[in-house]
Length: 131
Ligand code: HEC
Image (tube, rainbow, N blue to C red; front, side, top):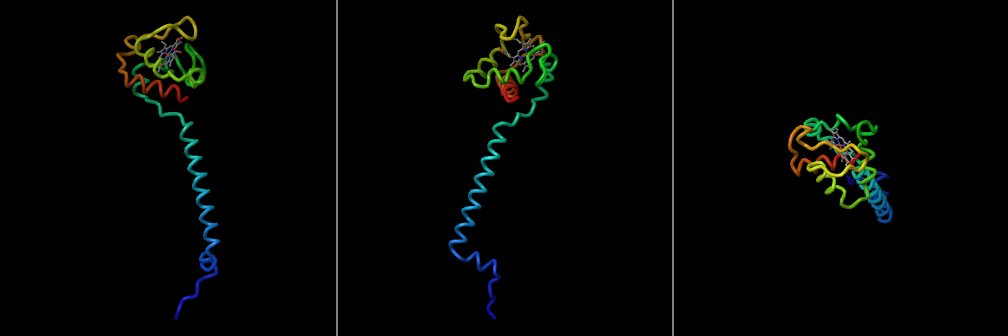
């Protein structure tokens, strides 16, 4: 005996309704993707803990309260829209430079715990700028 479709199944075979459902699903998926993208774009990067400890960054900095040094939040704010910020800061972390915040300059890597490779400087700066 042929099975009669259930009412829901019958509705789903009506083409215009199927179209409508697929449009809704498509929009829902697009909205979700956009939301995920927005969250990802603003997410703070994971702390590179080993590097941060080795270089004693948290000895002078905190994430959000200025202490002996500007907070990483303040630094991120200041440099967020500067196109060459990460190159500039990576160079400063590795080789030092003029003080940008006050009279106290940041100590050089050797005084912070050891030499810092370009790659590690990049990791640290990306992390600071994501805060
Ligand atoms: C001994 C204290 C001290 C330590 C340790 C330290 N900083 Fe700093 N940092 C400072 C001070 C002071 C300033 C402000 C210097 C200035 O006026 O440019 C600064 C500034 C900065 C800036 C902004 C530089 C600029 O030119 O605007 C960044 C980025 C930064 N620190 C990241 C780090 C990171 C990452 C670490 C760990 C690798 C670290 N700091 C370790 C004291 C420290």
